[in-house]
Image (cartoon, rainbow, N blue to C red):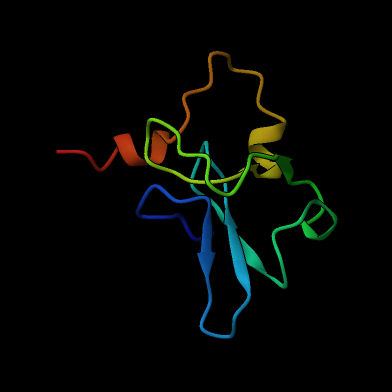
Length: 88
């Protein structure tokens, strides 16, 4: 499983496709043609936001959650926890 190393919601690929990034654990999905609701991988969820929406953590656009984090019940769930582990 690949984990993101920066605060992003989407990673563009060289072939023009996109990979979704879980906003909780940083897991990266396989590449997709688009990031529309109808094209997200099975088990992933999407919280749609306008493309110009910027959150306090600097991420832009819609939020995505991987299947593992969708099933978590250990509240409160910390978003971008994967970035806290690497912070100096």
